[in-house]
Image 1 (cartoon, rainbow, N blue to C red):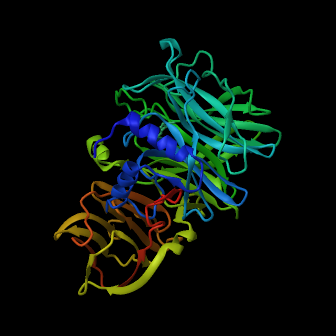
Image 2: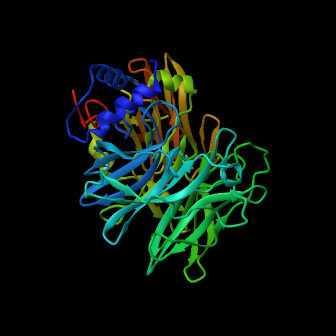
Image 3: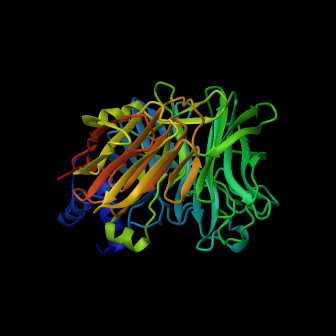
Length: 507
Ligand code: DQQ
């Protein structure tokens, strides 16, 4: 498919910007979206825009009985660029309805080159976004240089004008216009605000060359004027000389700071992965002391953002990124999707636990159960690339249990749980098997087009992308080397809409 960003962008904005529930698509765009929806590699039960590029989740919020999720969107192309905030709304975090674009760059304004990531809070009864605006600026004001772009980053405020969160009023000037005086930062973006009594606090992703990535901590009485306090947390560089400070650990993106099960958590993204840490936060000194940390997801997962659901569960959304070249993304016409909603909890030793929200089970169709043993492996052709596979119970019988996807008889993906070596292996990724007994004694895999989200023992997660799968030519295999039989449950998963979440359109 060949894209002309300008024309596409105008068409898309017109379509989504119409705001009506049933917007008639132009014949050409309809054909384009319908063709994209037929792509078997495109997820059918993960959230993604009808076409074009998306990345980070932004400002998730439960408001007036609905879940709202915003996300980084390039409305004119299926590669990164021209960042807007896309918007989707859902009653259950599973079934979504597309909404008009929530935030777009203002020509001549501090976000003229893009509305980067940020968060939503409720301020005196009104939802507010705090996000990063980027613009061109004289070199001495540039805070982002990653080898490609040179931009000034400032923190912006926008207030909701209606309860459907369709219209947002931006403050014209940034509420945090520059990094702390004298600090030569490697970046200054992705604000994560929270309230503590009369104060609002805000962490901003940042870092310094030779020192390491960090979160800068600010404080305010009312969201409009902020005072810099100190670094909330900081890391160390990995020693690599890289043009992009995110690759050397000298810049932390998308911090998220919150409490779960009475533990304080800090998440941040750097070196292509997401780090979680749990620890203690001293509210009077406003310092975070990390006690435990780990990698949140060992695969193609980045820039997550959490929020509190209606029933107080802490839910995490993350960007499932692509792992194929831009030319292939352009040809596909779509890129990126949102992870399934993950519920965060904290284990007895302060370790992060993460499980798909129970709402995901509403997608299950027909159930099948098979018993797999050393003598009787399981192998089955998949007519659909939308399944959930679950191995319930402790599979720690000194065996290796492998789940494999084969295309034309050749392995395309496999995940091995090796309880002798105490490790999980998937392609070139190896990580320690969570210590037994598992708090959530289950291995769960969600296959959706080219996406596989794997959850091991409720503790470790790995998101994979596989672009060679084809319905009809793909087989699923489960083998085990131990003496024990293992029970495997499987469900076909229902698509969340007939046309891949294009519910805001009429066809
Ligand atoms: N994506 C956004 C930035 C953020 C990065 C730009 C992380 O705000 O740092 O699209 O993926």
